[in-house]
Amino acid sequence: MEVLKDLFDEKILKVITLFIENPDKKYFLTDVSKLTGVNITTTFRTLNKLAKKGFLKTKVMGKIRFYQLDRNEKTKQLTGLLRKNENNPVEDFVSSISSHPRIRKIILESKEGNSAKIILVGEFLPQEKINRTINGIKERYNFKISYVEISENQYTKLREFKNYNLDKKVIWEKTK
Image (cartoon, rainbow, N blue to C red; front, side, top):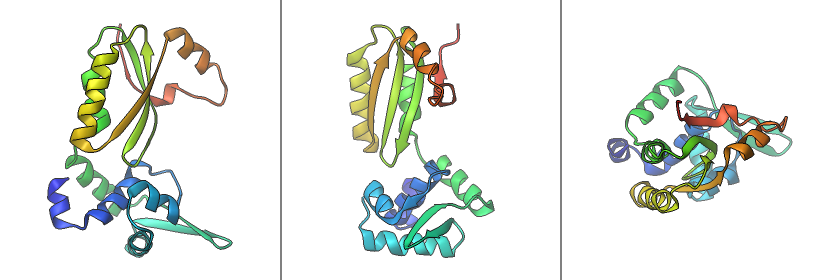
């Protein structure tokens, strides 16, 4: 990603990365500005430029316009390029924490902009190691990870909720 930052405006990269990381989400102008930390005027110009170039699609409902990643060959190529050139803070977190024997599953509850919410399934998890890893990721990537720890029994009960499909969000699971 550093090479891309040298070549391209960092604000454009922040905006397009938000859409690439959340390809199914639709965003309003103010949402994009808040999530990326780019001022609203620059965000407006960037969104319109990306839409004209075919990276984003727009939809107008009344007076409100929202934006979504346009899934086409251009965005596939750009996604591949960005993913090759960036280290993934969530992947780093998983690789560091998953080695602990009491962690059974890691669930990515949500990821937006520079933060992620994670559910750790297990018993008596190593709080100190988890917090050290999170602090290292915050320093290295300027990325905030919040987490909650639940037991396997709590995980099973959460799965029983009809509108809450945890299985699709599991990003790592201990093999037995």
